[in-house]
Image (cartoon, rainbow, N blue to C red):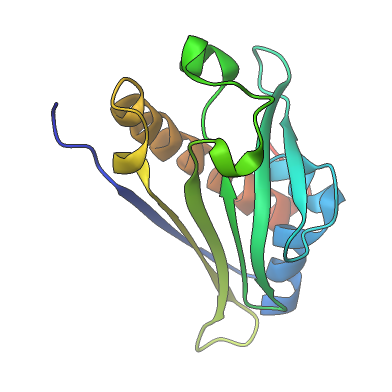
Length: 163
C-alpha cells in the first residue's frame, strides 16, 4: 500500500477577535454556514451527527466530542467521508466505538493584533483507516478543509458563506 498522509493541518488568519472566531466554531447556526450543522451542542462526551448539504445532496457524519476548552479548542472524533466513499466497508449503525474515525481539533489563537485571530485545523488518523479508503479519505478531507475554511473566511468576513 502506498504511504497515506496521516495528518492534515491547515491555518486561517481572520480579521475578527478570538471570541467571534470561537463562536463560528461552536455555535450551531454559524457552524452550519461553513461546515455542518451539529445535531447536539458541542460539549465533551456528546455523540452527535454533523449534517452537511453539499451540492450533491445531504450527507451525515457521526462524531463524538472529546474536549471543549472554552474559547480555545474543540476536539472530536468522527467518521470521515461520505456514505458512498465507504461502500460496504462501514456499518453506519454500529456503536460509535466500533467505527473507524479520525481525530479533529479546531483551535482559536490570538495574534499580535487583538482584532484578529488564527484558526488552526488538525485532522489525524488516516493511516489507521481501512487501507481500501485511507488514501482517498485523506485526499478528500484535505480538499474539504480547504473548501470549509474558505467558507469560514467568508462567514467571518462578510457574514455570508459562498454557495
